[in-house]
Amino acid sequence: MTSLFSKEFISEITETLRLQKIKLDRQIKDLTNKETGSAFPSYGEGEDESAEEVATYDANLQLIDSIQSEMRDINESETRLTKGTYGTCKYCNNPIDEQRLRARPTSSSCVACKKALTQEL
Ligand SMILES: [Zn+2]
Image 1 (tube, rainbow, N blue to C red):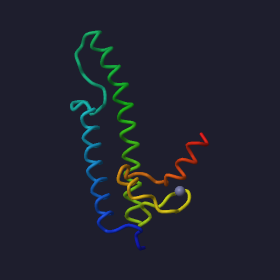
Image 2: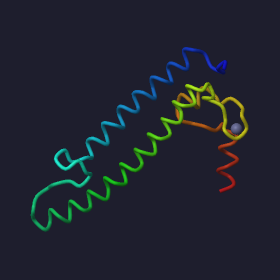
Image 3: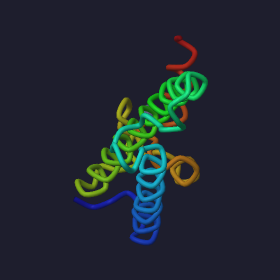
């Protein structure tokens, strides 16, 4: 399949996605307690510390959740890159603007469709 984009652009995006994944991976690791392997932190045994742990745990879980959904978007983009369907709007099949893809490499819809969708909401 011939790509809509130049080789340079595709490798630029591939690299951006790769680096982004490494960054997200590190963020998840930072949020994970090294001893327990869970997102539950360990501040101490006191009651104050326990309350703080639970609050941090909730926040950590939310963060991890959003990081993981970002990861999924990146993985999908990588699949599209491999298949040669990257940069095509999933609604109208038109090519997505390079500028838009540079700013947000996981975009899967063009500006016009995105606008139409947002206005519907
Ligand atoms: Zn579109």
